[in-house]
Length: 266
Length: 329
Image (cartoon, rainbow over all chains, first blue to last red; front, side, top):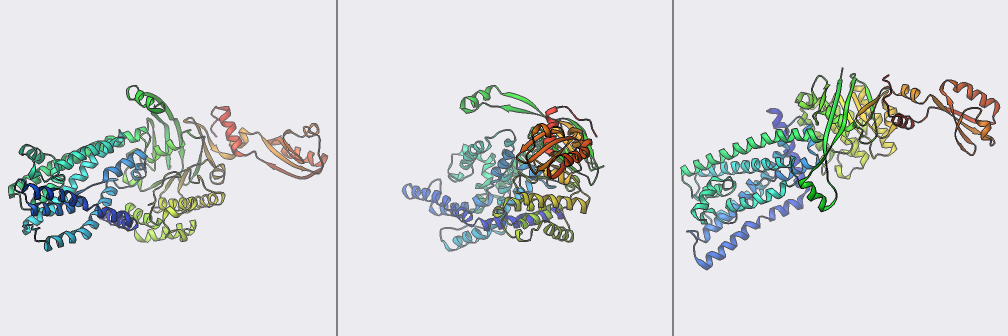
């Protein structure tokens, strides 16, 4: 364990140094912050025209999408691209020769960005919430804790889900395209395109069972005080089931995949 | 014993696809596979501290063998044991004791100075601070790394990068080194530096080294013992000098003459290999070298004379040309 902490410290430091090295890229990435705000403006235009939707008025959409901008960054995982590249080009060999699991490289890489986001964007969103009369998150100490926990589990879920999909790369060169498809469906069910509250009941219920809701909508719903204690508990339970399932899928296919990799010429 | 390889076999299926869209479509329904016998039953042992050169043409199975020994490939049959470990299990204890350097792959963090990779490796291999500093100082000294440590890896020349690559691979002081083309693409000076370094590391840590190279000079400078491999089969295992004597039972007598001499007259002293103006090269039987040289000096207008072994390249080519395994020495 102590060894692993040392490895994480070293890898995180490298991650941050790389981020400073790619300043322009980091900046552009931060600027994509505006995408949810574009979504927000679309909905605001609709509300201005047609009045509140499913009980959602201007301030609800603003509060939702400002938080979505932050949480989308916090829960996103881009490891699929790294896994795919490593496996297809054979760079995985270099990592397999190291006495740590390759998973740690990818996780630390993601964590580096998360800390960066939290430091840069966290205060911005807090400031916006404080200054703007339209944004009002009814937070208690407990709900704040639940929001933080759901952001962590949301990230873990995205991480394990994309890692599981990435294992396809041992057999196929089309992993990225396939994932884009799944990801597109996910954006619909995660509350990114529209808050889930606006969907018909059937779709909302289906979304409650899919992993996607828990990668974005769930923390936002808690933050906005839309969920009861038992709904929050149920949400965490569904998250846990998906998390465990994806972890098992990943480990099983990782073993099979590495075996295949060893067989066909690393 | 450091390495024990027993009838190691590695076959793989390669799937063929004709070029173009048509080929892609056809291969979607009907895949054509071919079995490639990359390594086809080779056996050898290597003692701790030995430097062994692995020779063979492209595709002979050298890299495949090294990958099997590193645990990256699962052998089809036969067995390999390195330092008492079975490589393909990739136990941590094993991974911490060897290194595989591939001249064509790189582990250095491309956009950061090499020092960053060194620090990451220190953490990954759990190298204690004091030992890390000591080893680093030695490597910096032996490889002349000082000016390179703070430069971004992508700004280093190929030779400089290879030096850093080697250093990154050796910070945990591995006992066994698998070096696959460590000097590929380097100029003569850089090649010589890498070679000297490998020898110094081998002597300091009595590390076992198994290296492949296209440059015969690497092998002749470093390894007393060579393994010649072709199409997955071991053609020769033994002393380099012994192979030279066995395969080429002649030496080259190089003469510089003071005036031209007729070829028929030269033939009296040995087989004429080449005539280039006043420079003449003759093949003479290995055991009659001294006699032939003495006679030539006495009867020809000789300005200068040297006796050499034929180049190793030629000898290896000869081994391959004959296509049969030379008896093991």
